[in-house]
Image (cartoon, rainbow, N blue to C red; front, side, top):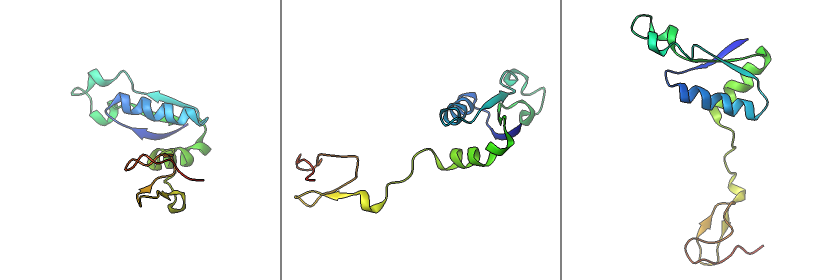
Length: 103
């Protein structure tokens, strides 16, 4: 096992776990219940941590958490409406004039 992420916000750790689980990277959360000990123990020892079960998944998991699951749109994916407005690829209708994308 290898630690890849830690945060004082347990929801953030669970979000990271859900993201990794969605791509098949198996994880476990440690220190989830130690928040009540902060102040009596150093906070760095009490923060929830996300660990990958397979050490070979550590680097892909870190990269996914840093970059996010979606790739940025490439410039070639934009289209221009007849009115001149530039639209991103996911839109099929112009927000400016309500014309539909011509294919």
